[in-house]
Image 1 (cartoon, rainbow, N blue to C red):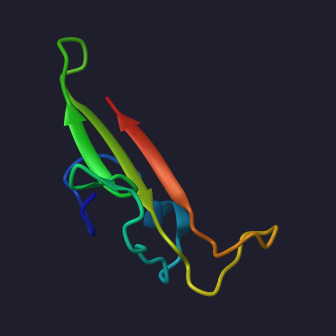
Image 2: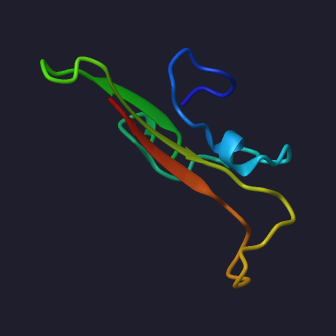
Amino acid sequence: MPEGTVDFHVIRLADGEGDQTLIRPEPEYMSDNVEWGNRLTSEWSPLAPVQYETDEMGVIPGELWNELSGAYSPAIHTEYY
């Protein structure tokens, strides 16, 4: 998933979190030269010619989950047809 703006309709993790300190962590899930935690894939079919699937992960430095289980690291998964 590219950082910054994209030219299609998808909710970005930064938009949902609304926190300017959100950063992208070091890649954790690399396979076949794809960072699976921050990716954009596109497909098509006759019934849905435009299909996007995105995953984004982030970390807000200094913030913890409510149950104090570790650093606050939100993620979002989007399917767009």
